[in-house]
Length: 203
Ligand SMILES: N[C@@H](CCC(=O)N[C@@H](CS)C(=O)NCC(=O)O)C(=O)O
Image (cartoon, rainbow, N blue to C red; front, side, top):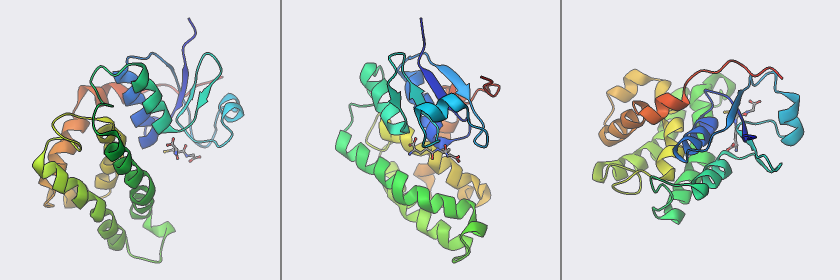
């Protein structure tokens, strides 16, 4: 049986969330680990924009946005009810993450590329989103309530990256709920299973 092909990059947060949804939905895929500086010709042929993840289905359909891959996988099979939470609210949070927060994250990670402000300014801007999540996570274990949902999975890889810029700062910060939530995901079996290493795909 021909498996869907997932072009992926292990450390990419978008690819992480796609791999997590596919894993939970129990959809087997052929993972093709790429390097960003030398993308396979087939990947660029089916998805010329050149970002990962890209999912190529056996019938030729191509999903080239991580969120589309997540939603496609979970609509096929959602054993943990990740789509059952308040969908518009989940999508709103993901949009905030993917737009404003991701832009700030890039600046905080690479301040030398954005010298108009010091790095601390980018951290302060990112903290607007951290504080929003913290307010929620002080009152409940997950972003939309008592159970994890698609928003937790879609957002946590980006928070993980933000925190990794200055782990000492985060460990001493007042984000108690956020720390517990992040730690839970980072230590989860799910995360361990999608972070296993693959050799770079050789066509
Ligand atoms: N909107 C896309 C963004 C994906 C994305 O930007 N991925 C990065 C890696 S984290 C990428 O492939 N960048 C292309 C490059 O650096 O050449 C999605 O959600 O899938």
